[in-house]
Image 1: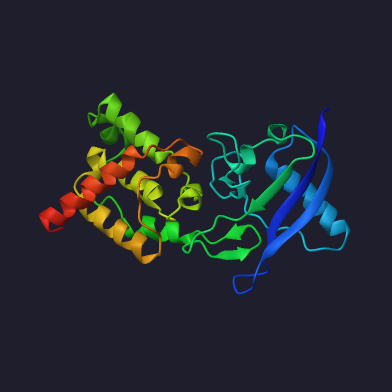
Image 2: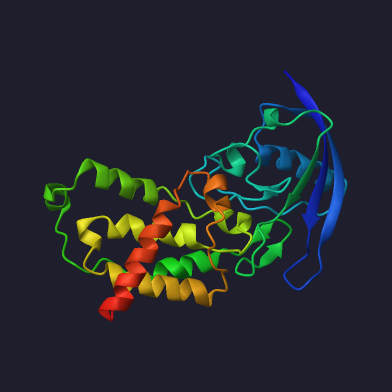
Length: 251
């Protein structure tokens, strides 16, 4: 079994009101089959045995589904591999002797709670602002009877793949949340069930996004480059169109 040695520079911060700084750690004999989070588990076991405070980091399913994990590794959200979450990043990506600089997702709208843990509840409030689909869609059989083209269904499903991890915000030089918000708007506005309220929904979600303190989109495309689900910035064009329709219609 192949193993590597690593030097880690990890951001440590006691709480939101404290000043943080990088601390350096050394790990030896890390198996290359480990995931990045498993490597952090090994580090925390080592710190615990030494009587030190373990590194706090977000995680849940560890299958790339929940969107809970996320850190910036050597300047890239979720690390150097394409279309993977941090829990899907494996240590075989790195070489023995590498130095890994690990820090939290940084954004005004993502306050740091401790170490690598950030508060992403701003995303929840954006989704809540969108409200519900209030029309009567009937039961499952009725829903399946509504004709939807394969292309439209695929585009909606592609947008719905967003897991709300926040990598798009962390990578954006402006700290914008347009890719996340546009994905949530697109997945509903493309489908017949979501069309009646699509303009109001876009207005409400964009208003909430702005109130949370996210920056403005300038089409830098870093968001698309680091998205673990490959969400396209074409969704931002859909958001802009829906938002403009709402303004012109007076919704």
